[in-house]
Length: 413
Image 1 (tube, rainbow, N blue to C red):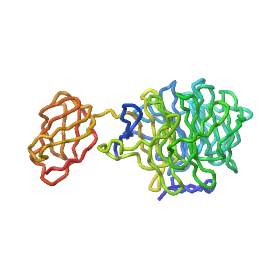
Image 2 (cartoon, rainbow, N blue to C red):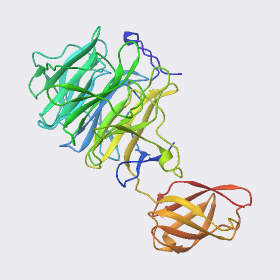
Image 3 (cartoon, helix red, strand yellow):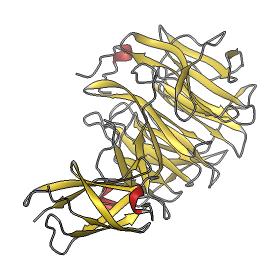
Image 4 (cartoon, rainbow, N blue to C red):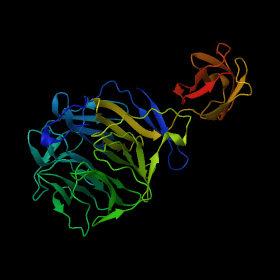
């Protein structure tokens, strides 16, 4: 059952696997699960941001099995490390974080724990520092923040303090300033934002208006909000996560829920429309995606050029898994063909990422190893193992220098 939380009466809902999806340009993108030796405890309703100067993602707080959390963790691309700062924000959840590149600090605002917060903290890579700006946004939770690099300020929008809000604030490293746009998105909570650097605008999607999930897209240009009407769009949802993939010039959205169903779909925003990244674009690839979830967090790892996702929840559990969205880096099977498809006969595997050295490719039909008779980087000629049985379907996979390909089903005749 979904772990319960009683704050403000909000009802919670919320394998090692690889899933590849279509992407912009020639790159084939994939979600790849990481297997660090140590991880933060399972949690949801936490926040993350990437500290560019330290080349590490920073995670703070959330709620887990032990209650509301106040721990700080960093991710270096392969491992999680728990930080031990000399000062730290009180434990909380439903806060928001963003990296202030002009000041080289991660900014944290608000959230709820033992009570609601309206405080501003900055992380310098070693410890947290409490700021005391005046004025500042009201105490709130369920808001979203992103850094507007064109105007060198962190933008905060919406949230909840006894009522849902639709105010916009900017943080310049010293003070908060309320913005006065001519147009604004409707009041909401549980929305997500990311800064689209390729188009110099901040993107907001979805959220919850108190009656239904939202599916609208808005952009912020530094002074005003404009609603966009893309040809395609993710289904309405809240409690999803977004991050800007700088290497591909796209905003990436994953997960969330519609108050009935949790999602595990991936969408990208190119400045004009949303595109769902689906395994159907490459049917031979395995269908394992990060499990459906909401209340997770994502950020972009600049050094490794990949989006990082951690945690969240679904009706079954709190999650503590780490995934990255990046170009497919292993060998890739696109097709397997054979004239007879019988044991002991020849088959041709077409794809990419193979080795031109025959012995560097290991080809398996289920548990049986096939001999490679010819090898090119885009094609392998193999002998179907004689131990394979007629009428049975086998999972075929190629391994090159320890990197495994996708799995393709092949019927032996």
